[in-house]
Image (tube, rainbow, N blue to C red; front, side, top):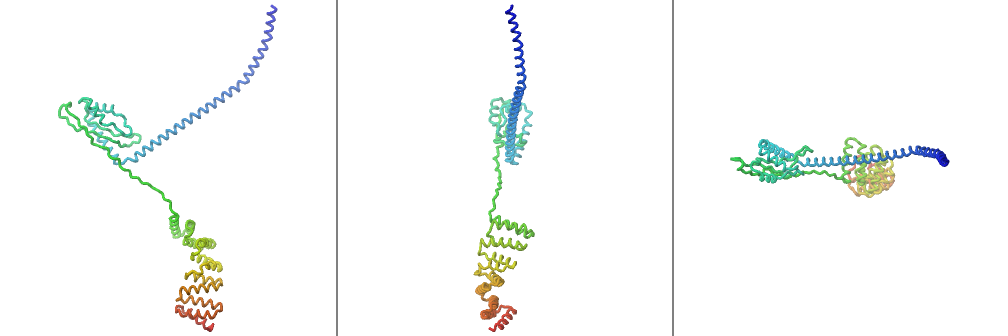
Amino acid sequence: MSVINQMLKDLEQRSPESNTDATQSGNVAVAHSPIKIALVTGFCVLAVCFLSFYVWQLISENNALKAEKITNKVNAVQMSSAKNRPENISSQINTSKQISSNENTVQNDPINVHVTKIYDQQEIAPINGQIAEPTDVNKVLSNNSAETTAKLITAKPLVNNSASQVTPVKKAKVIADTHSHSGDSSGHSHDIVDIVKAKPKPKVNKMSVSRRQLSADELAEQKLVLAEKALAAKQIEKAEKLLEDVVIIRPSDSQTRKKLAALWFGRQAYQDAVNLLSQGIALNGKDSSLRQMKARIHLKQGQFTAALNTLKPLAQLKDEQYQVMLANTAQQAKQNKIAVDAYKMLIAMKPDIGRWPLGLAVLYDKNSQFELASMAYKKALTKNDLSVSSENFVKQRLQVIGQ
């Protein structure tokens, strides 16, 4: 008994320790259970989100494919309807009317109803506009008795329900019954003939539109025309802009350059006009018209030396107007030597004109070269083309210088 009592005491001592351990383990389990639940819940939420996104992506791709198929079908229908001609549609409508009338005539015939059923069994929905050939129906007719022979078998045209338009049927054949009943229905035969043949496909007239890029010269001419219209409408700013574009496209066009310089000169933009003319002279130094216009702008501003420097590079040019301007500009710039050379060039060019010897004589007279002046005065009188006032002036000067 003592041994048993000792064992019971040991068990009683151990039981509180085990209870304490169980309580601690339970607390640990309770402490960790919310974390596990949170992890499991988060994983489930992520899985659901991923699955939802995947399903949504599949649905979107499916809808896109369906939309693409519908678009392709609509385009195909539009192309097929565009190729159809009004005459083809009208002929098909007439054919369908004739077929419907023939069907109405034979609709009440029980024999025809039976044959129609046989034909419907043999006929399958047309594929790609093809209709069952009449030869199949002939086989059916040959295998049946005379009582099941039809009076009329027709091929119905295909109607496209999706486009609500009658589409032409290729190789369509309408079969007509050309027999007559003279006696018993079992003693007659049927002759099946083709009365309508497919018409050749009409040619479609196509019109193509192409764009051609204008060349530089064509674009410049177009802008010149617009500039002229703008000037006629007194739209000066618009005309200037168009002329600037032409000058950029064709820098060597001196006429357009002078027009633009004249517009700038008119609104007193002297420096812009001078720069524009200087650019033209740099491109073509032998263009006397650009030099003359630039010299006039300098003279307008009282810049006589600048005007003379503009004209001097072409001092040997055999042009009457240019030499006259050079002589006058040289006199204003007090460059008598250049003026004398200009008058000599004029005399060599037009020896029959008395104004040039008269101008040369005046220059000699101012320089106190009286002998040369007297010779020039006398030469001017011999031309007989001076005015009365000019002749009186020449005679007075000859008396003064005493020659």
